[in-house]
Amino acid sequence: MKVLTLISTAIAALAFTMPAAAQDAEAALKTLKAENCTKCHSVDKSKKGPSYQKVAAKYKGKADGEAKLETFLTSNPKVKLDDGSEEEHKVLKDDKARANLIKWVLSQ
Image 1 (cartoon, helix red, strand yellow):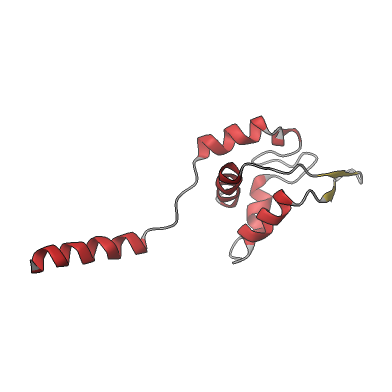
Image 2 (image 1 turned 45 degrees about the vertical axis):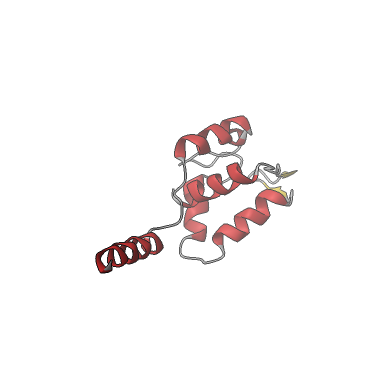
């Protein structure tokens, strides 16, 4: 009985030390294409909007990074583009896809 308790405790401890669910890169890339995000963004090059690497660098080490991107992708803000023009950023309505995409962007 003590061995079973020890094993159960070890498994529970391991579960708490694992990182939160990792992003699904394939699903994130599928979302980017489906939502036409690649029109303005790229992984490593700035287009009309910043690259995902630039976005990740901006929020690196900041506890509120995920929350800020969540707000950005749900509030339809006006964004100022490099050419000086402005446009409304598209809202990403699918909660699961949005959460995965945010984790993926921050991992770049």
